[in-house]
Length: 280
Image 1 (cartoon, rainbow, N blue to C red):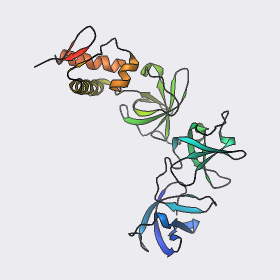
Image 2: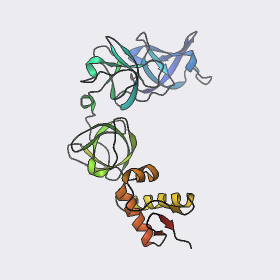
Image 3: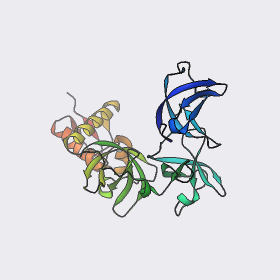
C-alpha cells in the first residue's frame, strides 16, 4: 500500500505513453510521469518514490525530494496567494503546497513571507496540506533523545521563557533565553543539543554542546581561526556576543570557556585588544 505524502518503494506494473504505472495497493495504479522515469525502472522492479496529489488531485509518484513529508514540520516560502483558498508554499515539488486560510491562525500570509508549518493529509479532502497550528500535529510518542544529542533546530516563535523550536522536523522543544545571546527569528535553523527530556515529552535545548565536549570543540575552532588569521585576532573575553557568534558560531559563555582551556594549556596569550597564538 502506498502512503500519501511519504516515501514508498512501489513495484512497476506497466509502461505507458505517459510514464510508468506503479502498484499503489488500495490506491490502485499510480502514475510516475515520464520526466521522472530512469532506464533501470523496468516492469517488476521496485521504485523508491514520493507519492502526492497532482494539480488534478490524482495520486502521482515522483523522484523529487520535498522539503518536508507528511508528519514533519518545515519553514516554507509563500510563492502565491489565492483569494479564497489560501497561501501556496514552495515545498520543492512541481505542485505547490496549500496553506488554507483556516489553518493560518491569526496571521494571513502574503507572497514572499515564510511560514513554519506542519504537513499533513486532510481527512476530508484526502489532500496534502499545511497548517501553522503546530500543536495539532505533534507526534504522540515520546521523543527518542538522550541528553547531549545533537539535533537540527528550527525556530518558530518566542515566549517569555525562550524560543519555541521544532526538533528534527518532528518534535517540539524550547531554547531558553539564558542559553543563547542571539536574537532568533522564525525560520532560523541550526544545530542544537538536548539539555533535558521531561517525562511529559517536552524538550529543553542548548545552543552549544555541554561540558568537556563543548570546550574541546570550541577550543579547536578558536585555534583554527587563529591559525587562518596569522596567529592573532581582535577578540577577548569582553568581545560582544554578536561578534563572537558571527565569527566562531558559538555563545560567549562557551567562547570564554574555550579561551580558558587554551590559556591553561599555554597555547594562547592575551593582549589588551586581542588573542594570540603562543609561538613554540
